[in-house]
Image 1 (cartoon, helix red, strand yellow):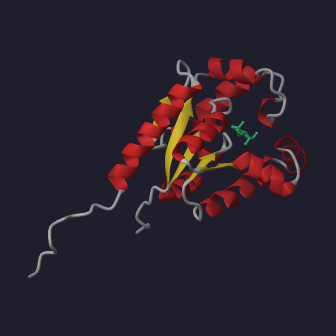
Image 2 (image 1 turned 90 degrees about the vertical axis):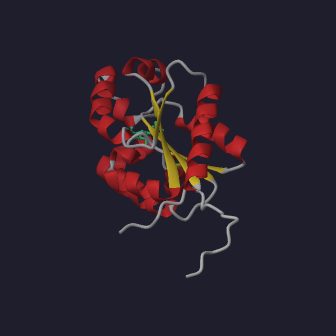
Image 3 (image 1 turned 120 degrees about the vertical axis):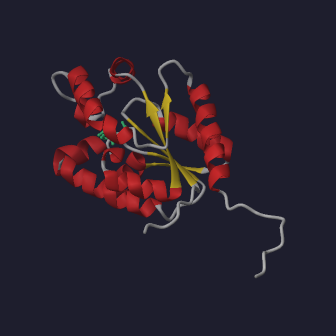
Length: 190
Ligand code: S3P
């Protein structure tokens, strides 16, 4: 049997352009938590951009590195993680995050995502002839995984501040539910 769940961190998962890093930083500030962006950590450890990692080492290599990093996250406490868009599309990563974090998926429609990412050139998976099609295909492949998050928050019609409030509300609820219950009753003796 697996270990009992300890919700001491918060992990934001979801597609590119759903606001994980922006919202994550704001949530961390409000909760007085640390903030860790998995892509930024990978880039600083390898001293290489995600784009150049994909170009030189390939996506499979990147996914394996990402998986190793997720295993390390279990050692953190009081930290908000913003994860790369494909990280939660691996059931091993999702299961690992759920052991120590509330997993919150930020959601947006393919159209909204496209509007948010269209001017960015640093996302390797969208440097293709038809990025809008790539978004739709990737998103539909990943929906079954994103749905397994503890909480799904739609970001399309919400400001980042409203999303932050929702995330914090859900986190506090989950923490209360998982907190060890204290009882004022004396222990029952046989
Ligand atoms: C990816 C999303 C990116 C980054 C890499 C792959 C994906 O992160 O990890 O380009 O597979 O969706 P963001 O979601 O932060 O853009």
